[in-house]
Image 1: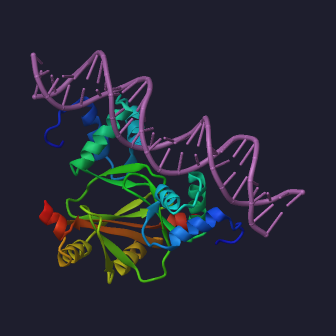
Image 2: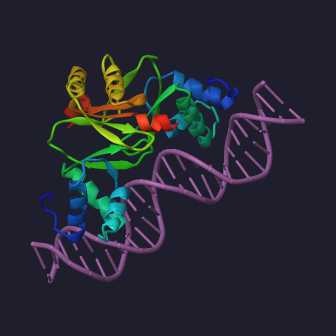
Image 3: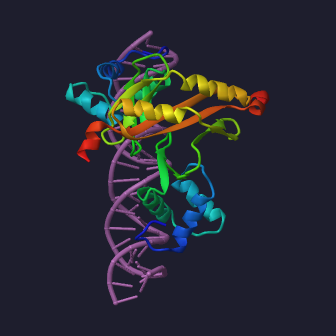
Length: 132
Length: 132
DNA sequence: TTTCCTGCAAACCCTTTGCACATGG
DNA sequence: CCATGTGCAAAGGGTTTGCAGGAAA
């Protein structure tokens, strides 16, 4: 848990669900999973908790093709990107050997401070491609 | 214009706006730009036209961080990225020597087809930094 | 006890859809 | 003509917020 937050039944439940999988899940999916396992947590709280976790850097966020926010536990502290299938949403985590350093260099060259970047890679995975 | 579509004042207006810039714009921004230049086009029509253009492969689509769809004219020009100042919005165009090739390689390694990517670099430019 | 958290309901906001009218071909 | 496009208004759907009650510290 991030500092400055209280330990509540609801947050522990969300933590547990996020901890047990590496898949991206929307807030609604997390909420449904919680219901399924008997943890009663309000949808609002799920939204707020996931946002807090994202702010704290505990989970990654991305937007699905139809505009939903999807969250997934960070599996590596190291800077990385995601290769996302636009067909099924399957995601592969990609280590980033060079891009980060390159963007820092570019930013510095142009006198920019506090440089960061967003990189998402999209494609159609083998299965979805075969399926048509 | 894509085949099988009628040429209307509204579509020509949207085409014109999209043609004159390489920036990503949301439907609402396009609508506002049209109003500003005196082209009266309904927001609904802007949405429908941009979707049609996306289906026809005339524009690229991506989702912004807060879930809006953003559209940009497909450019056959060289692939490049933008270094954007989060203070004043100033943008520097950056040539991309390696990132594109790298993402293609990564996608292929994981069996992905039709691989593309979005990369935006953010920072605070010298002036904004000095200004505090 | 004080401060933060929760959850319901309602508000929000972008986007899509139903429908009657307008218009390109 | 008539198939397609347009625009208003209303519905959709995910997400956020106001607020009163509840729980952690």
